[in-house]
Image (cartoon, rainbow, N blue to C red):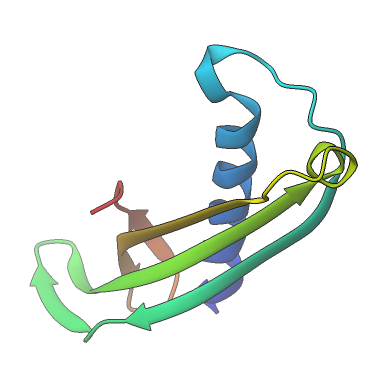
Length: 101
């Protein structure tokens, strides 16, 4: 259930990062290709807190993005690999996604 929400958040962040590079809006054109591959999912930790039970685990992923500008200028597409910690509630909804670890 959380996978779609997680992938949407990562995709939005990756696109925003590409567009905001160096603090300026770049004219990259439309996205031609966007692939997000989960490389590794760590062990799930069950944590009992004051507000209830939640689950935490680490995810490693790779984002591959190619824009119209990359195709036209035959540039190497952007590839980013990162690790994050995800916290879910007992219903499987995302409570938090950490900054890169």
